[in-house]
Image (tube, rainbow, N blue to C red):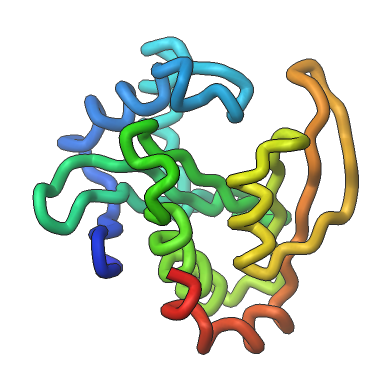
Amino acid sequence: MTIVTRRSLLVPYNESLQSDFLLLNCCAKNRAEMNGPHTVSSAKQLFSRMLHDETIYARAVLDSQTRDYMGHVFISTLDELPELGFIFDKLYWGKGIASEVLASFFYRAVRDLSLTQVMATVNSGHEPSIKLLNKLGFQLIAHKRDAFGPYDEYRFTSDEAECLSSQDETLA
């Protein structure tokens, strides 16, 4: 199913989007807050897994006018504790695109997939992502550290989804 927002189209992935996905995920600047860039080989593996793994619900984010690839949104580990993730090309940072896209994608995914809890992690101090998670109704639950440095863990629960689902358009 395609999701339409004011400035974007969120479409299911197919093979034709592989090169855009690889460029997005192999760029050091795009992935600076996501534990660094993938190699071409690891990005290809990730793309293949995303296409075929039923525990990943993902959409490519395209510009609604030009159809340019702007980013990637997903909820992974659907068979365990689902985790929200998102990455946008640096050309689209600071324009409210992520807020617009995630307001539509996230609440629909929670409803359509009947999710009761969703996790998200963000590098400590990465204010744009922290602000966005807060807008979506996530709550900070832990400060952690791994080999890549300190990060924060957030949780969203479905009772918050019921309260906020009517607001998804107002967040965008």
